Image (cartoon, helix red, strand yellow):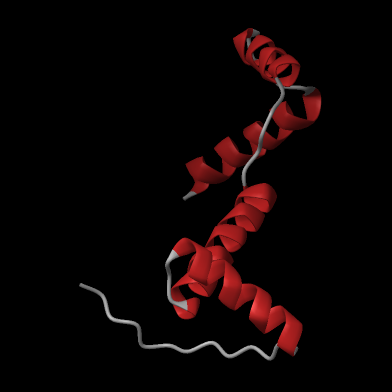
Length: 91
């Protein structure tokens, strides 16, 4: 079982602290557990919002349609691939 080693301190005004204590009480949790769980839930939501790509149904279909098309490199990519191949053969 992992043990908590790090601490996080936060300053609250009295009204905010009382509201958090009341919410923890209603959930039958210690304040520290309530605050940790709520904070981690929000942190994970924010990270997912910024790091995960979420597509609508329409966007998903458009992406799948695009992926189903055969790949044809443009001129710039063809030139880059030729340069890379030439460089690989020199080494």
